[in-house]
Length: 132
Image (tube, rainbow, N blue to C red; front, side, top):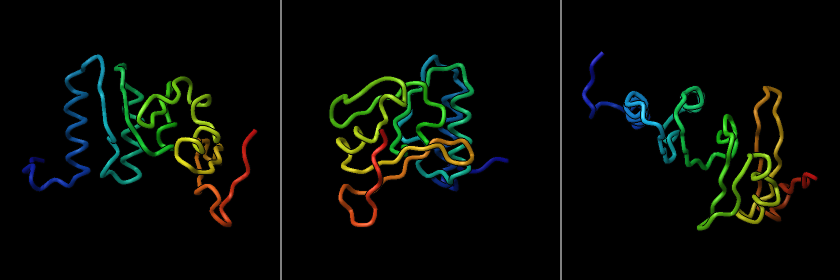
């Protein structure tokens, strides 16, 4: 099916840009918030697709759970480099508290996915226990 670019939604445009980048088969692709404008299913599809390629993919994401899906290295930044390494060593409740000012609980959900639940530090009724 052929459609005019102007008729595509933001998510469809995003997926078309990424498909074009993958089709060119570069050794490295840099993506800034590639899941922006995508519904949940398409976010999961995209992250799984990127992980299935032989290319080096560098992705900037703000979704702490989605970013953990296939990540073998994580860089945490807040103006400057805060931490760099394996996800479990970088994404800790203590770091998330110091960088983002949130209490975080990191766990594996019943489906086997890593999840990050968070609340503002000191927010009444939402304080989460610290993970050891």
